[in-house]
Length: 345
Image (cartoon, rainbow, N blue to C red; front, side):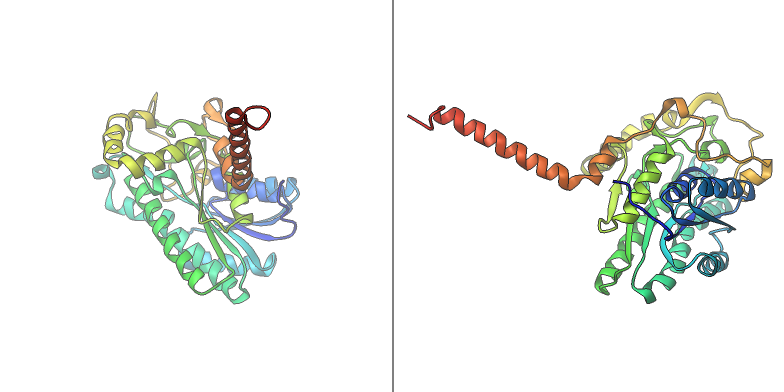
């Protein structure tokens, strides 16, 4: 069943496009009051209209999450204009697609400030309000790359690994304090978002997500579900995420060699890199071109709108009961086969 979020206050960072945009709209469609934090005015305005049209109430707030003072000011404004924050979803990020030695130190710092410290700052602003009330949920948007690094994305992988460690540490502290504030993390697969249109890239060909590719709404539904069920420390979305994490756990060295052989080609299309493409590392790409990119990228035809693995992770208890019932049925059938139809000789 779809959880209702009527009049609950939700903050989503990175809400002008991609996963953040889809997540804000999903919460809006369930009646939430949604604060949208991002840098780009064009994307924020369009996202706010979508949230309102779906039945929610939107508050767009231009914010650079790499600046703690801006994040804190945004949180204060949200509570004044919408009410107490119930859920905070960290989803903002940026990246540079290139071999590590081709990324300038200032670029690496910038993407780390946004993609890692942006989560730290958002989490701190949320906790400063949730802890005194002893309620609230913080959802960290993760990735299979939080566990498994891949070539050409050293900065992004490093940031996601950092978020994973930060999440685990904070969760332990909250459990120790017996706090009713919950934190959870959602590990995502390759997604059809606009990042591959606006990411800073030094690859010879146009970047793409590692297949299989999923639509951002798959991620959005997972993040909303995690906010409603934060008891689990993390959720995995997509069969590719599950396979990657399991392969890394049991065969990391083999996976190193496999990705060294396949990871360069799988992250590029056959199209040459667009040399005049505006990227979002320092400035919001939508404002630079006066264009709202929305939630979807350029790979709609190749993208999946559903994830069986996500459904399974959301219905573990049902599947456990079904598995137990199937086991009992099989056991009874085997017993009958051994003893005969009349219960034995």
